[in-house]
Image 1 (cartoon, rainbow, N blue to C red):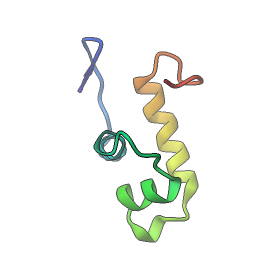
Image 2 (image 1 turned 180 degrees about the horizontal axis):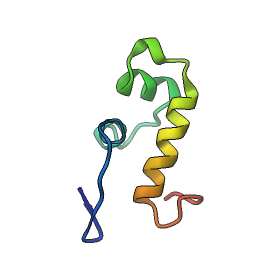
Image 3 (image 1 turned 180 degrees about the vertical axis):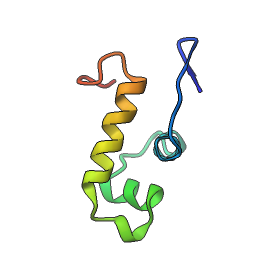
Length: 69
């Protein structure tokens, strides 16, 4: 994937997370929904997974990860 002309390498999990957002652009996605879509139903309560991967994705895609757009 590229962003502003620069290649951005995503892990398979980061890619699946991004796909979840792009696939449902007009919906608010809860932690539970994202965990189930990306990791599966058995991980629906593992919120720390989501927080870690969201932080990694923001670092790669946002100009200012602390203030995501």
